[in-house]
Structures are given as structure tokens and as C-alpha cells.
Length: 170
Image (cartoon, rainbow, N blue to C red):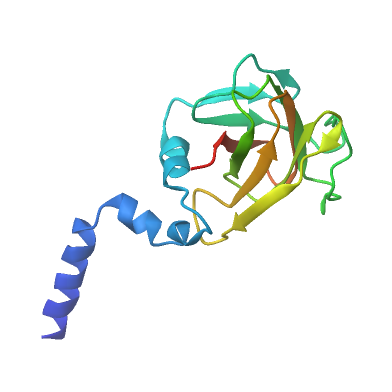
């Protein structure tokens, strides 16, 4: 009888869609939904952006940011958090004027510190949520952006690339 129960459980597990399994690993426990970002992060055609780039438009989905070793990364302002490791990576990307002022969401695939700078000052977050048990998204931060250009800085990243999405919050 026990063998039948285990076989049935294994069969049922095969029927559960991958999205449901991923959502069960903590991705559905953020302070707000990251379902849109999870879809963007899993897309195969993400744009690659090199640290230091000035973009003409904000990518409409997720993008891969290629980083530099912390000692080589140039920042507009020193990161608000000092990197915990000399072996970490970081970088910046400059963006044009946002379409409209309001609350924007910056979502990261990996553990990192994120700063957004407008008019030479750090933009303060209005909320953040972090989950170490979500395999695709580690952190999401909401910030109130003015209708002006901005710089995204990431630091204290363990690898030389990170997937990021920036969009108006829902």
C-alpha cells in the first residue's frame, strides 16, 4: 500500500506545472507580486547591458547587466552599503527620463545592493521585499522616481552578471 501511495505522489508531482513548483519555493511570498518579473527573467531574449552604459530607452522587460570587479567599477556616488567582499562585482547604467513620475519597481535576480540616483542624490525606497527561497528573484525595491533621468547602481554582487527589471509598479 505504501508503494502505491509513493507512486501516486510521484505521478501527481509530474503533473504539477513548473511555474507552480517555482511559485511554491518562496516566489509567491514577496510583499507584492513578482509574477511579471518572473516571466521576464525566464525569457530567453534578454538584452545584455554593460556596466557604464547609457541607454536611450528603458528595456521593456528584464535585462542582463554585465558587471565589473568591485575595485574597477565606477559609481556616480559611493554605494550606500560597503561591499562585504573584495571579490564582489558592481556597476552602473544610466537611463533617460522616465515616461512619467511615480513609483517604480527594481527587481534583482541575485543578492545585491541597489542604489538609484536622480539629480545627484540617492532616491529613497518606499518599500522593499527580499526572499532567499525564490530561485529566480532575490530582491525587489520600490522607489518614487521624478520625471527625470536616473542612474542605477548595483554593488556587492557575487558574480559578474545580474538580471534586473525596472518598471512602473502595479
